[in-house]
Image 1 (cartoon, protein in one colour):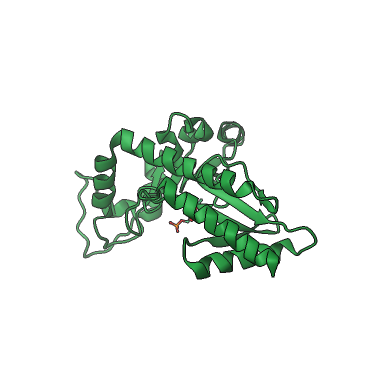
Image 2 (cartoon, rainbow, N blue to C red):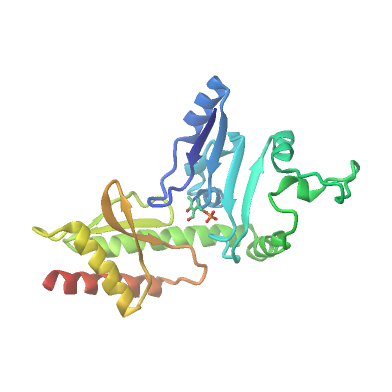
Length: 241
Ligand SMILES: Cc1ncc(COP(=O)(O)O)c(C=O)c1O
Protein backbone atom coordinates (compact mmCIF):
# COMPACT_ATOMS: atom_id res chain seq x y z
CA UNK A 1 0.00 0.00 0.00
CA UNK A 2 1.24 3.50 -0.86
CA UNK A 3 -0.16 6.53 0.94
CA UNK A 4 0.36 9.88 -0.76
CA UNK A 5 0.21 12.85 1.61
CA UNK A 6 0.52 16.53 0.78
CA UNK A 7 2.77 19.15 2.27
CA UNK A 8 1.47 22.35 0.74
CA UNK A 9 -1.76 21.78 -1.18
CA UNK A 10 -1.67 23.24 -4.67
CA UNK A 11 -4.72 25.43 -3.98
CA UNK A 12 -4.60 26.19 -0.29
CA UNK A 13 -1.04 25.53 0.83
CA UNK A 14 -2.51 23.28 3.54
CA UNK A 15 -0.51 20.44 5.09
CA UNK A 16 -1.81 16.99 5.84
CA UNK A 17 -1.15 15.88 9.47
CA UNK A 18 2.04 14.06 8.58
CA UNK A 19 2.88 12.65 12.04
CA UNK A 20 -0.55 11.01 12.34
CA UNK A 21 -0.36 9.71 8.77
CA UNK A 22 3.15 8.35 9.37
CA UNK A 23 1.87 6.57 12.53
CA UNK A 24 -0.97 4.98 10.53
CA UNK A 25 1.42 3.95 7.74
CA UNK A 26 3.77 2.37 10.26
CA UNK A 27 0.92 0.35 11.76
CA UNK A 28 -0.21 -0.90 8.33
CA UNK A 29 3.24 -1.32 6.78
CA UNK A 30 2.39 1.23 4.07
CA UNK A 31 4.86 3.27 2.04
CA UNK A 32 4.39 6.96 2.82
CA UNK A 33 5.08 9.35 -0.03
CA UNK A 34 4.84 13.10 0.56
CA UNK A 35 4.26 15.63 -2.20
CA UNK A 36 6.25 18.57 -0.90
CA UNK A 37 6.49 20.51 -4.16
CA UNK A 38 6.02 23.72 -2.19
CA UNK A 39 5.66 22.57 1.39
CA UNK A 40 9.06 20.97 1.90
CA UNK A 41 10.57 24.45 1.79
CA UNK A 42 8.55 25.45 4.87
CA UNK A 43 11.31 23.64 6.78
CA UNK A 44 13.62 26.54 5.94
CA UNK A 45 11.49 28.88 8.05
CA UNK A 46 11.58 28.42 11.84
CA UNK A 47 8.09 29.93 12.13
CA UNK A 48 6.61 27.52 9.53
CA UNK A 49 8.67 24.33 9.93
CA UNK A 50 6.04 22.90 12.29
CA UNK A 51 3.65 22.65 9.33
CA UNK A 52 5.81 19.90 7.81
CA UNK A 53 6.45 18.10 11.10
CA UNK A 54 6.73 14.37 10.44
CA UNK A 55 7.88 14.71 6.83
CA UNK A 56 11.22 13.16 7.76
CA UNK A 57 9.37 9.92 8.51
CA UNK A 58 8.28 9.55 4.86
CA UNK A 59 9.56 6.69 2.72
CA UNK A 60 9.83 9.10 -0.18
CA UNK A 61 9.43 12.83 -0.74
CA UNK A 62 9.08 14.83 -3.93
CA UNK A 63 9.75 18.53 -4.24
CA UNK A 64 10.50 21.07 -6.93
CA UNK A 65 13.40 23.45 -7.15
CA UNK A 66 11.74 25.10 -10.15
CA UNK A 67 9.08 26.56 -7.92
CA UNK A 68 10.33 28.20 -4.77
CA UNK A 69 14.04 28.05 -5.59
CA UNK A 70 13.29 29.97 -8.80
CA UNK A 71 15.54 27.83 -11.00
CA UNK A 72 14.40 26.95 -14.54
CA UNK A 73 12.22 23.96 -15.40
CA UNK A 74 12.61 21.05 -14.84
CA UNK A 75 14.39 20.62 -11.56
CA UNK A 76 12.19 18.15 -9.73
CA UNK A 77 13.77 16.33 -6.80
CA UNK A 78 12.86 13.05 -5.14
CA UNK A 79 14.31 11.57 -2.00
CA UNK A 80 13.83 8.11 -0.62
CA UNK A 81 15.26 6.14 2.25
CA UNK A 82 14.95 2.91 0.22
CA UNK A 83 17.97 2.82 -2.01
CA UNK A 84 17.43 -0.71 -3.28
CA UNK A 85 13.81 -0.06 -4.30
CA UNK A 86 14.84 3.24 -5.85
CA UNK A 87 17.52 1.61 -7.96
CA UNK A 88 15.31 -1.31 -8.93
CA UNK A 89 12.60 1.07 -10.14
CA UNK A 90 14.90 3.26 -12.21
CA UNK A 91 17.83 1.25 -13.46
CA UNK A 92 18.10 0.23 -17.07
CA UNK A 93 20.57 -2.29 -18.37
CA UNK A 94 21.80 -2.61 -21.95
CA UNK A 95 24.80 -4.33 -23.45
CA UNK A 96 26.33 -1.06 -24.64
CA UNK A 97 26.11 0.65 -21.22
CA UNK A 98 29.24 0.29 -19.17
CA UNK A 99 28.69 -0.21 -15.47
CA UNK A 100 30.91 -0.55 -12.50
CA UNK A 101 30.22 -1.99 -9.08
CA UNK A 102 32.82 0.31 -7.57
CA UNK A 103 30.93 3.59 -8.01
CA UNK A 104 27.39 4.84 -7.84
CA UNK A 105 26.11 5.27 -11.38
CA UNK A 106 23.75 8.27 -11.35
CA UNK A 107 21.74 6.89 -14.27
CA UNK A 108 20.63 4.02 -12.03
CA UNK A 109 18.55 6.45 -9.98
CA UNK A 110 16.74 8.61 -12.56
CA UNK A 111 14.20 7.96 -15.31
CA UNK A 112 16.40 9.25 -18.13
CA UNK A 113 19.59 7.88 -19.62
CA UNK A 114 20.66 11.26 -20.94
CA UNK A 115 20.03 14.48 -19.11
CA UNK A 116 21.53 17.86 -18.47
CA UNK A 117 23.22 18.81 -15.23
CA UNK A 118 20.14 20.04 -13.40
CA UNK A 119 21.84 19.68 -10.04
CA UNK A 120 24.26 22.46 -10.97
CA UNK A 121 21.57 25.15 -11.06
CA UNK A 122 19.93 23.80 -7.93
CA UNK A 123 23.25 23.78 -6.09
CA UNK A 124 24.05 27.29 -7.34
CA UNK A 125 20.69 28.62 -6.13
CA UNK A 126 21.07 27.00 -2.71
CA UNK A 127 24.65 28.20 -2.37
CA UNK A 128 23.69 31.72 -3.37
CA UNK A 129 20.66 31.95 -1.05
CA UNK A 130 22.32 30.20 1.87
CA UNK A 131 20.25 29.09 4.84
CA UNK A 132 19.34 32.65 5.75
CA UNK A 133 18.42 33.67 2.20
CA UNK A 134 16.16 30.64 1.76
CA UNK A 135 14.45 31.37 5.05
CA UNK A 136 13.90 34.98 4.01
CA UNK A 137 12.54 33.93 0.61
CA UNK A 138 10.02 31.53 2.15
CA UNK A 139 8.94 33.98 4.85
CA UNK A 140 8.70 36.87 2.40
CA UNK A 141 6.50 34.96 -0.08
CA UNK A 142 4.23 33.66 2.70
CA UNK A 143 4.00 37.20 4.08
CA UNK A 144 3.03 38.47 0.63
CA UNK A 145 0.23 35.91 0.36
CA UNK A 146 -1.05 36.92 3.80
CA UNK A 147 -0.88 40.60 2.91
CA UNK A 148 -2.76 40.01 -0.33
CA UNK A 149 -5.48 38.13 1.56
CA UNK A 150 -5.74 40.93 4.11
CA UNK A 151 -5.89 43.69 1.50
CA UNK A 152 -8.59 42.12 -0.66
CA UNK A 153 -10.66 40.75 2.22
CA UNK A 154 -11.36 44.33 3.30
CA UNK A 155 -13.78 44.40 0.37
CA UNK A 156 -17.32 43.32 1.38
CA UNK A 157 -17.73 41.01 -1.64
CA UNK A 158 -14.50 39.09 -1.10
CA UNK A 159 -14.13 35.84 0.79
CA UNK A 160 -10.72 34.32 1.37
CA UNK A 161 -11.41 30.59 1.29
CA UNK A 162 -8.25 29.24 2.91
CA UNK A 163 -6.19 29.74 6.02
CA UNK A 164 -3.17 31.40 4.49
CA UNK A 165 -0.51 29.20 6.09
CA UNK A 166 1.95 29.15 3.20
CA UNK A 167 2.30 31.15 -0.03
CA UNK A 168 -1.21 30.54 -1.41
CA UNK A 169 -4.30 32.70 -1.06
CA UNK A 170 -7.63 31.53 -2.50
CA UNK A 171 -9.92 34.44 -3.18
CA UNK A 172 -13.58 34.27 -4.15
CA UNK A 173 -15.83 37.12 -5.21
CA UNK A 174 -19.34 36.83 -3.82
CA UNK A 175 -21.49 39.83 -4.76
CA UNK A 176 -24.92 39.50 -3.12
CA UNK A 177 -27.58 38.18 -5.50
CA UNK A 178 -25.03 37.36 -8.22
CA UNK A 179 -23.45 34.16 -9.46
CA UNK A 180 -20.20 34.02 -7.46
CA UNK A 181 -18.48 31.61 -9.86
CA UNK A 182 -19.19 33.90 -12.82
CA UNK A 183 -18.16 37.02 -10.88
CA UNK A 184 -14.90 35.39 -9.76
CA UNK A 185 -14.01 34.31 -13.29
CA UNK A 186 -14.93 37.76 -14.65
CA UNK A 187 -12.58 39.38 -12.12
CA UNK A 188 -9.75 37.08 -13.21
CA UNK A 189 -10.37 38.02 -16.87
CA UNK A 190 -10.54 41.73 -16.04
CA UNK A 191 -7.24 41.65 -14.09
CA UNK A 192 -5.53 39.71 -16.87
CA UNK A 193 -6.71 42.24 -19.43
CA UNK A 194 -5.39 45.19 -17.45
CA UNK A 195 -2.09 43.35 -17.02
CA UNK A 196 -1.11 44.83 -13.66
CA UNK A 197 -0.51 41.28 -12.48
CA UNK A 198 -1.32 37.79 -13.73
CA UNK A 199 -3.79 35.65 -11.82
CA UNK A 200 -4.91 32.15 -12.50
CA UNK A 201 -8.22 30.63 -11.53
CA UNK A 202 -9.03 27.32 -9.94
CA UNK A 203 -12.00 25.36 -8.63
CA UNK A 204 -11.83 24.38 -5.00
CA UNK A 205 -14.57 22.31 -3.33
CA UNK A 206 -16.77 23.12 -6.32
CA UNK A 207 -16.20 26.88 -6.01
CA UNK A 208 -14.43 29.07 -8.56
CA UNK A 209 -11.57 30.96 -6.95
CA UNK A 210 -8.66 33.19 -7.75
CA UNK A 211 -5.45 31.32 -6.93
CA UNK A 212 -2.69 33.61 -5.75
CA UNK A 213 0.59 31.75 -5.39
CA UNK A 214 3.59 33.89 -4.54
CA UNK A 215 6.96 32.27 -5.16
CA UNK A 216 9.07 34.72 -7.13
CA UNK A 217 12.11 36.05 -5.28
CA UNK A 218 11.69 39.49 -6.86
CA UNK A 219 8.09 40.14 -5.77
CA UNK A 220 7.94 43.19 -3.50
CA UNK A 221 5.44 44.69 -1.05
CA UNK A 222 4.63 47.28 -3.71
CA UNK A 223 3.87 44.54 -6.26
CA UNK A 224 1.39 43.01 -3.81
CA UNK A 225 -0.24 46.36 -3.08
CA UNK A 226 -0.55 47.18 -6.80
CA UNK A 227 -1.92 43.70 -7.53
CA UNK A 228 -4.46 43.91 -4.70
CA UNK A 229 -5.55 47.34 -5.95
CA UNK A 230 -5.98 45.90 -9.47
CA UNK A 231 -8.14 43.09 -8.09
CA UNK A 232 -10.25 45.55 -6.10
CA UNK A 233 -10.72 47.77 -9.18
CA UNK A 234 -11.72 44.71 -11.23
CA UNK A 235 -14.30 43.76 -8.57
CA UNK A 236 -15.78 47.24 -8.80
CA UNK A 237 -16.00 47.13 -12.58
CA UNK A 238 -17.44 43.60 -12.66
CA UNK A 239 -20.07 44.28 -10.00
CA UNK A 240 -21.04 47.63 -11.54
CA UNK A 241 -21.84 46.03 -14.90
C1 LIG B 1 1.73 20.58 -4.70
C2 LIG B 1 2.18 20.29 -6.11
N1 LIG B 1 2.50 19.04 -6.47
C3 LIG B 1 2.90 18.73 -7.72
C4 LIG B 1 2.99 19.71 -8.69
C5 LIG B 1 3.47 19.31 -10.07
O1 LIG B 1 4.80 19.65 -10.20
P1 LIG B 1 5.62 19.44 -11.59
O2 LIG B 1 4.92 20.28 -12.60
O3 LIG B 1 6.97 19.89 -11.30
O4 LIG B 1 5.54 17.99 -11.92
C6 LIG B 1 2.66 21.02 -8.37
C7 LIG B 1 2.71 22.07 -9.41
O5 LIG B 1 2.15 23.13 -9.28
C8 LIG B 1 2.27 21.33 -7.04
O6 LIG B 1 2.00 22.61 -6.68
